[in-house]
Image 1 (cartoon, one colour):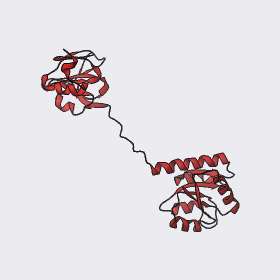
Image 2 (cartoon, rainbow, N blue to C red):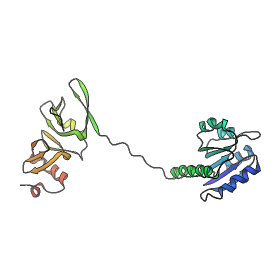
Image 3 (tube, rainbow, N blue to C red):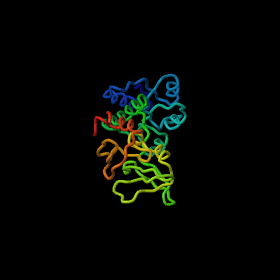
Image 4 (cartoon, rainbow, N blue to C red):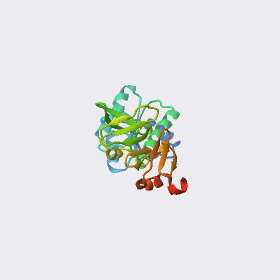
Length: 240
């Protein structure tokens, strides 16, 4: 990671450079005593990180950073606490107040390095997996968790959604085919034209029947291949 040191005081630049000798992942690409000189180097070279004073003659550090179109990471190193809010409004990586303890300086460097590595190797976030669905029931829109559904029975124009631990099913005016489209296929399996089961509640499979925690349901020959996918082998080998 290449950095640029910006401070109008030579001793402050020396101290920054001396502190950076303890940091093997940051290379000093240059030292500037004015914002103007820094601007020239920032426009002509690849700079990943800037250590910048704020109170400088001419263009100050805040004005310099505001003027940049493609900003590197910035750590302000200043004698004044009063500019902290202005600094963080610029989305700087850190704000250090002189005199800066070495431990605090190293923490700021580590933070910058973590951000640098994250930019190089962004973590792709996976969308949150849906765990529920909604149905219309009793003139309400009812939320049902996938994990609570033991099995679903399809009637002519309705479905009965049987929930674990609930004495009465949720009855909704829809078809079992339409409802199946809302359910995760790795969890719910059609075993009959009138039944969908949650595999987590399956206790036993035998010829023509599937036993769940609280029900004994018919298994249609037309859906035996679905059961094969669920258990990973032929049903005939599993039960008689």
